[in-house]
Image 1: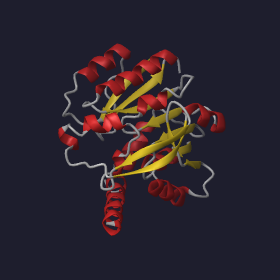
Image 2: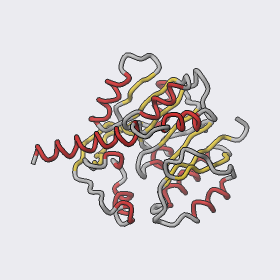
Image 3: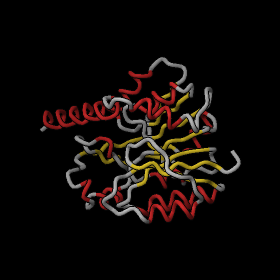
Length: 250
């Protein structure tokens, strides 16, 4: 069984590398997208850094990056990939509303879907796009908050959140508005995106735009009511994507 588990983990790791590093033009698309939010010298948080493709693109724009990744296999990779570089710090932890310890649910063959949110896992498992996914392992991880990371590293100009249904819990650990950020949305679990928007609007007034799937392109900008209507119109079988938020006046 141990050999089978190791093979599944190795296959999942290789698959992630192929998906996020192997597609022609992906890195250029990421740089084009983030150039609207990041300037040389800016501090950026990459929360859910995974294999570090977005950390790589943000570095290429001259940003200083805090790469947050709780999965030991991928945190090891990030430290090998970026170790010794003054512009990248790897934080081996998850984020949530409060610090502590938590059980991270893992899918060995689909490691991009690791999550702390057991309810999210149960809901998306019923969606057509997730029917083939099995969460078959777990690991205890250290948990911090966005506030604690800001206290240690400074306030980021941009923060990317991709933590598989746990985005609202991460934002609950933030007590100040950030100039810009993104969070993943999943049409099959619309309440997560709604909670993210509610939290951001409690901290400040934002404008929002969506990027569908892995298009790396933004739709039109609008206020909270407009992005809520757009999200409500996404059928559960539609692909996940990211909502980008920019603080009004920045």
